[in-house]
Each structure stands twice: as C-alpha cells, then as structure tokens.
Amino acid sequence: MPSSLTPVTLTGQLISLEPLDQSHAQGLYNRGRNAADWIYMPRSCFVDLADARQWIDEALEAAQQLPFAIIENAKSKVAGSTRYLNIRPEHHSLEIGWTWLGQEWQRTGVNTEAKLLLLEYAFERLGCRRVEFKADGRNLRSQRALERIGAIREGLLRKHMVVQEDFSRDSVYFSVIDDEWPQVRARLQQLQQREPAADSHY
Image 1 (cartoon, rainbow, N blue to C red):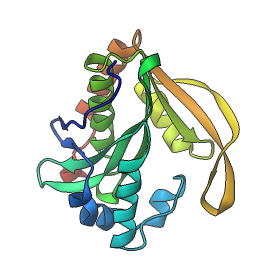
Image 2 (tube, rainbow, N blue to C red; image 1 turned 120 degrees about the vertical axis):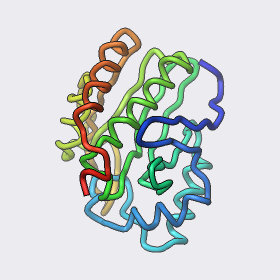
Image 3 (tube, rainbow, N blue to C red; image 1 turned 180 degrees about the vertical axis):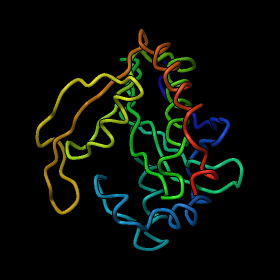
Image 4 (cartoon, rainbow, N blue to C red; image 1 turned 135 degrees about the vertical axis):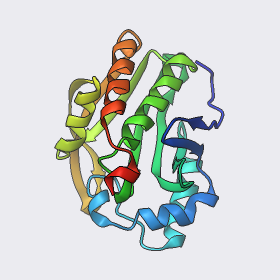
C-alpha cells in the first residue's frame, strides 16, 4: 500500500467518485440540507452554502483522509459524498465512511456501486488487507446494509464518539479483509443487478 494516497476518480455505471473540491459545494449544499439524513452523522446538516464550503475545507485538511463527491453519471449531478479515512499504510488498512446521499438517490443502486468502487480500488489497486466501517449503534439500517454486502460485524465500542448535541454514541465496527473480497465483490455485483437506478426510483 502506498505511503500516501493520490486523489483519483473512480467511475462506474451509475456514478463516478470525484476528488472532493469546492466546485462541488453548491450541489452538496442542495442535497445536504435535510436534518433527518444527518441524524447519525457526527454533525448536523448544512445550514447554508458557506457551511458546505467549510465542511469541504475541513474534509480536505483532515489527516489520513481522502474525500470524494458522488456524481450521478446520467445527469452530472452531485448526489452526496463519501471518503476513505483512518488510512494506515503501514498496516495496509483504511476505513470507508462519512457516506451520505441526497434523498433522490437513497434506496437506489448508488450506495452499492459506491461501496463496490471504493472496495475494488482499496483491495485491487492499493493492496489493502483490511477495510473497515463503523456505524452509530442506533443506526440499525446502516448496520443491516453492511451485513447485506458481506461485511463482518466485529464488535461494539461503547461511548466511542461525541456527536451531535453532545451525545456519546456507541460505534459498531465491521470489516472486509482481503481473503473475503472475492465473495464480497460477487455479492455487491449481484445486488447491483437487483437495485433500481435513481431515475427509476423517483
């Protein structure tokens, strides 16, 4: 695994993952204003365009992270964001997280394809041996989604993070390791075939 990650665009059938920058601010603000979508995130939704711009700056400045904008290919619209974080080259390991989507793209194939692109690049190009995910202990939907793609639940870290409204959340950790990647890739590809595109969902 390289000692530092270079920004890269990952392209699939429905979406592309572009290196996050300020050109995505307006689109992210437009999609990221619904408080309900951010209820389990470390912070609340965007309050104005300046807030979205500051969030982008913070993401770009964060250590051991590589953030992406999620772009719907068909309409060239910003759908949301995701990132690699907790990048540990010496351990051939990273985390996928900070993933959120605007409502138009929720419960479509977009999140599945984003996970496929990120995992594929991590294991097949970066040489990762482990990719991890963490979910708020209250967020059962996210936990079910990770189990659905074949990620293994590893355990619960109690009062792991202080998030919105000074709440001490428990974090549930999941992972996929390199030995499991072929089966997880096949599972994601199966799910892709069954899930609706954004256009067919709305």
